[in-house]
Length: 284
Image (cartoon, rainbow, N blue to C red; front, side, top):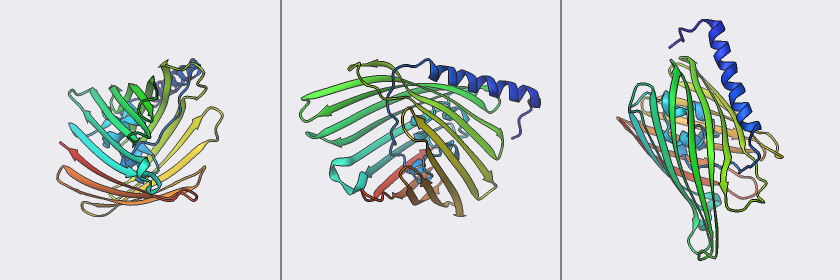
């Protein structure tokens, strides 16, 4: 659906939103690293979340996404074993709900590692609101906890995520996010940085969606990813993606029927081996 805004008003609001997000990043002196979470669908498109606005796993990437979803609600559960190592099992769940015309909420839980060795547990909750037509702003609160061995050492952090997402046209989606702005941290000598991200997707109706993502952590190289979703036949999609620094590719598929879906993705790594991710989703 094409926005009814005059062109000048659209540009003015878009620039103001970008400036606000940039200022929020500049104001943050404390930092925390970005992580890849185990949403099978998003992993299949190299993390370019604008290719899957309805995926509840996008709440980890951009808290504004749930406000642009078409369905009333959705849930997702994914499992992966990173580099085929038992110690690197990762289970991630996410859900979103659109209780009102302009309001949406989302949340998720993730557990990575193996008991008695190393375990990371994370939770996130977010709220988003459309500010005009298909333009939305969102904010999320993320909590993290890490345990070494039998709880010999553990630390936790609380972080703020901010995001903007928009569909200025029916075939175009854009997102801008700033994640891991530190609110509270147990150890004050942590110098890790927040994450800046920009993603955009273009859809050639009805079968093909192309998307890209750029992310940046202070002191690290720029990260780039491109992904695509191609509908082969009704209910069956082919997923692929390419990430740089280091170079990794992803290949997978998605089968959906009614409100349910099953996703499978293989993600390569030149040195550490491949990762298999399986996910299930429900929409209503």
